[in-house]
Image 1: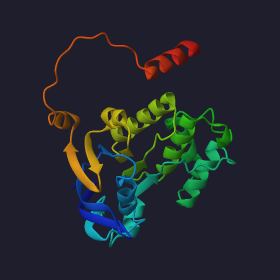
Image 2: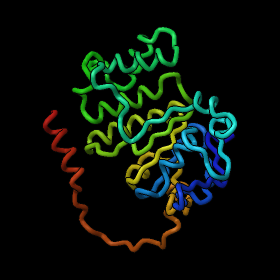
Image 3: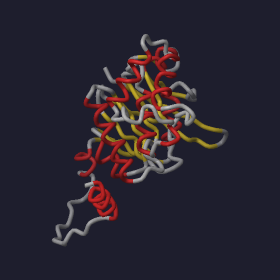
Image 4: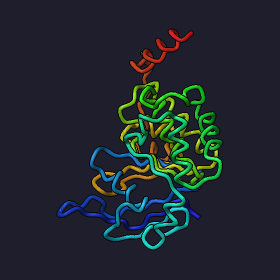
Length: 250
């Protein structure tokens, strides 16, 4: 059974048709990247799958539950992390986690928070207010909050928007760890390198339709054979940036 299955999903806002018959399937325990430019319809699709929007046509299921007729069951099986961290800056990292655990009515909320702080390498910062966290730390805390209750499916909508290169790598490591632990991740992004590094499968959403869907190897086969030329590889600015940070930390 697919962790996520979408068939013929359509959605319009007024005269603007945002989704024009989207089909896709996501295997359990995989990272599926939905790639597209701003306005392609990525967030609209995620909101439909998270039961925050109703489609005009089509059907979809998440974790085996129909998003239209079993919305409560879908919500119990998922977590959604949006483009901006849903972290309370006035609370410490641990307090943010404890709050969410209590809202989910979990026993021993403190133990749940402490386990996640360790898991996401935030134990030393757990007693500090979230307002003092770096961008990467805030995003890791946000993802940790979304995992309380162990949802089998997590939606990450543009999770690295606005982050610096080092923070992006921290989030990438977190996403890989989620998939290694059996969590199904649907990742929306407009960054090509992000999809290339993280995804088991990649779908390209353009103008409301999936125009390509496959593994990275399969998608590369759609291009003509590359012309081989031998050139000296120059480091990118990101390579330089990260190397300088590593040297400074040594």
